[in-house]
Length: 272
Ligand code: KIV
Image (cartoon, rainbow, N blue to C red):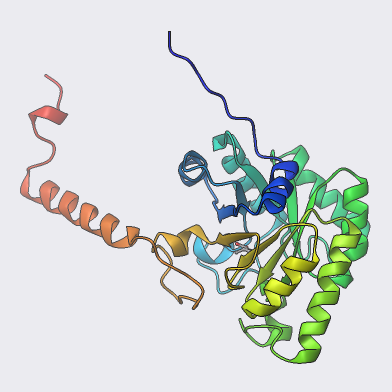
């Protein structure tokens, strides 16, 4: 008899336990069924359906135009594929900024309609009230400070944050504010590694770094960066683990050549 081992889904408690034990939390983005399946099968703890899909999937200039409906569409595909990882839906630009009420309603849609277990939202003290209200409504929230891409126009580009003493002090305060508001984890993006270390040591919730050095409780990257599928720019903090674009290009060129030369389809791929 084949014995099936069914691993339970990763929960917030598992992430907190990992921080307490000092074992690293792994997180990647995914935006559709096949990639979510691969990420899940690899044993990654959490999958973020990031608004980065605007850039890496939709081909847009930045993350601002992606809509709630598009985010829900992609989150549903990911949720369908995942057996173990925690699925986190990313709140897109203007889905939470206008009012706390609108934020809670939109956040709830990720859990109710798209199968996510939590949402992620950019911002510090300006979204503390939102985090509090979502948490009260049983919607777990992952906060995100440092470089917040939805603030690209205010920040003047994708720049490392927290370089001055004042900016560092402010980021440490923001980290405590979102923790106190009820966030269950915190993304730290593009900040100096010593600052990320200090925040990680001071907080009881896990920190997940992207461009924040090795001292965070976990790491996240955009899957298209990891697999070599996004070429427009490669941030310093990205490590490419393969070049899927080259491999796909090679396969497609061979297919084209075989069709043109009459090699494909052969008898093997044809019906008698
Ligand atoms: O949208 C996204 O993919 C993100 C992460 C990379 C943190 O916000």
